[in-house]
Length: 180
Image 1 (tube, helix red, strand yellow):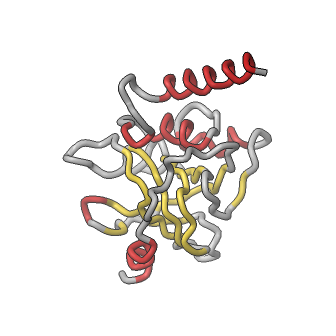
Image 2: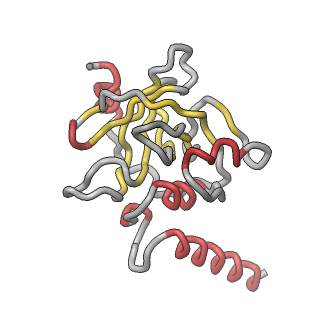
């Protein structure tokens, strides 16, 4: 029993080390691309460009169109996002508003690649199925004006404990979504 526990802990340590640079003390310290971050934060073991995750998940992970904590929202490839984007749901505020934690979206201190925790994503799809979203963008201090097409959610086996802060700003998230 003790041996299997140690092996399990070592697997978790090495899996996390493979996704994050040495010296990162937590998920929130990560600096890099969205894909390794989403993989480590959700437990979804998919590799390759973000836009390919939806098809790769077919038959491997449950997929759907309802946000759940730990689910990965997969963005389609567009001219603005030629590699797509993936983010992880950290809180569901209401059916069309969620908070997410993701990497490499906004510039943080003038640099891309950092992690943002508990920022707003708003479903603006006509059918309320999360196939079109707006995402909070640091430079505008609110939801950006761009609408991004998405494929849907991939439901992972184990969301990280650091996805959400102890006191996320639900009211701010709703204001971001509905006040503009």
